[in-house]
Length: 260
Image 1 (cartoon, rainbow, N blue to C red):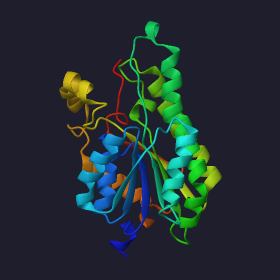
Image 2 (cartoon, rainbow, N blue to C red):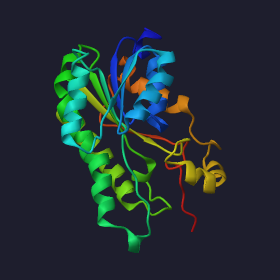
Image 3 (cartoon, rainbow, N blue to C red):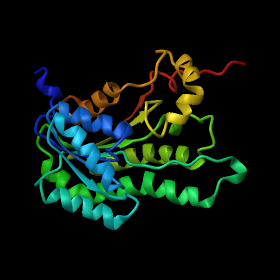
């Protein structure tokens, strides 16, 4: 049974926002594990650069897409369908953030972040459902993995109000979609803590040492951590897991305590 039960060899995977950050880490992990990977990003140049770098690990295709647009989401799924008769795994990773003080937080920050972080995962999953259903096999359902955040589990120490609210929404949307799409499609979420990425760069520069000190494991996330979790959730090893939100933070959020 082992290691075959953890295999994703030959599976077709779509990772949105796969040109940088945790999306890139996840895409690279799938390629190293033998999957065919499709990545998307808003910027065509970023797609081309990431595809060139990732191609050393396996078959990868990059498709520009702004996931906040339903029309572009539809074009993305149609482009994948032009190459694949089935999609085994959809990773809804693309997203947006916004930081500002409470009194200066604009309405535009809600529209932008909720469109990208909550509406897009739902829309893409709805549009991809026929391809996912085609991939579902007895003993190996298709998968949807939503990327949430520990900011959706605990109150963050920064003014990212729409982001933290959107990630909490993603976690509950994961449970709702899991109930709807079972048993042929399993839906789970990963809630990452700090990982080295462009989005986290400023935070890590300013308080990286404090974050490491606060973590029971004394470090931030590494690419292998999130890649392995995504591969597990895409393999037969996770056949009895759906509707779960997995904190991937070294215990940063899950062991937080209050001193009175």
